[in-house]
Amino acid sequence: MKKIWKVWTVILVVAATVLLTISTQYSKKEEISTDSYQYLIGVSLPNVIEPWLNNFVDVFTEKVSQDKKINVIFRDAAGNPEKQIQDIETLMEYGIDILIVSPDGSDSLSSVLSEAFQKIPVILTGVGAGTEDYTCLIKSDDQKIGRLAGEYILNNLYEKNKKIVVFQGVEESPVSKQRLKGF
Image (cartoon, rainbow, N blue to C red):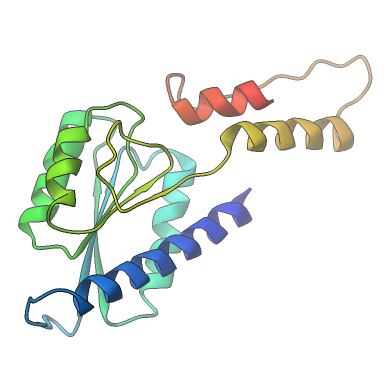
């Protein structure tokens, strides 16, 4: 499972780099380097207490640290949609070149994402946000992940006539619901 997130994180970093390259080629903005970095990426997360988001931060930071042209600012909304909106507004005020957002699964970010999308590329990860105003959406097939986890348990860990207990993630999370459905 951890390997899947590393692959998705690498894909995300590559997508962000490609989008930044394309956006700067067509931009009339003068190229300015501050503190020796060329691109400033803003990342807004709903709650880094979730293991996959925590892993995302670690892997993303590791990959980005290999490229001195990129600087990243992470913001954690700690499970508060209003704070995530404020975080995105603050990141925009910092003058970020690209915005990466992992929405909480509700439509609460639609307006602020639409505003950001008018100015810079916006990449969504995990789930959609109730708007079509984004550059790229990277998500996994959570129902299939749940099914694969169930198959693995049945084939490798299950003992006949024993019960299987499922621990799910955040109860109202769309990701948790889809994985449980697949399981």
